[in-house]
Length: 315
Ligand SMILES: NC(=O)c1ccc[n+]([C@@H]2O[C@H](COP(=O)([O-])OP(=O)(O)OC[C@H]3O[C@@H](n4cnc5c(N)ncnc54)[C@H](OP(=O)(O)O)[C@@H]3O)[C@@H](O)[C@H]2O)c1
Image (cartoon, rainbow, N blue to C red):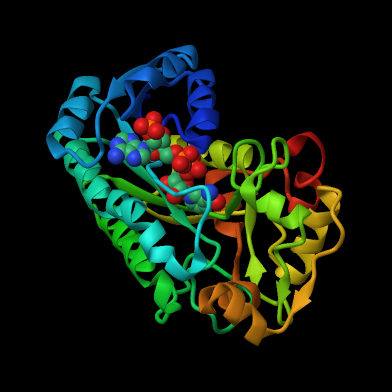
């Protein structure tokens, strides 16, 4: 199939584009940055330079490559996030999830794409009540911590726009927290977050009961290929088999990077040091189930648990 990837040069795009080419697809990769065109050619893709926030440029880029499928992996997340000012740090990403989504959808509609696959998130944004592990049918958090509100609104906007696009197969992939090479949890070379774990600057807050779902970057890319080839309209959680509380995964990550176990701090101190959102992420969030993606996409994670994935070559 002819596949247009917006965000082709990102951490995920760099794994995804070669996999799509390997699977026999004709790939056009979009970047804002002319200097990255050579990288896309190396992957076997046709590069196109356009700003996702410029509707005319996106319209032209999509029209020229006449894709059957569009994949939206656009993001602009800073390397160091301030959880007290999460919405400020996500402002550009939120524009890519709203205006960027609209631009890609209208360009795709003009050429009649068969599928539209867009990224979303499965790691902190579902309702914080009920079971510890949530499915795609569970609602997004109706009352997120204040610093996360605009970001959650942008996620909601993207999900509704894509699954509501009745003229195409609109597919949303709620990825778990990425780990593995190049991600914000990369061990070699160490990401800023891993450096914090090494220095014991990332403590477990309160009971550390907040459940996180992870996904190795290669498994996220493989699931995206499956969605491109056989996804149906709707939402899929793309996460591994083992949602885990911070009280488990953080000590395991510390062990994997050769650090001493994380410190423990009470909630009030966590709130003072890092704000309310950090306390919620460490104590209250829910994980996600991959049962639907396994069943309907015929996809299986190569790293079924972050326990193996955090160690060895996987990271
Ligand atoms: N990291 C996680 O744990 C996680 C979890 C779930 C979901 N996600 C989502 O999954 C997606 C892929 O993430 P990633 O880590 O691969 O992102 P990334 O490495 O930051 O890559 C961002 C991509 O977006 C492109 N981009 C940004 N602004 C653009 C603009 N104005 N016009 C055109 N292109 C633009 C960049 O292109 P150039 O730099 O080449 O111009 C780059 O290809 C993102 O949407 C992210 O939000 C991430």
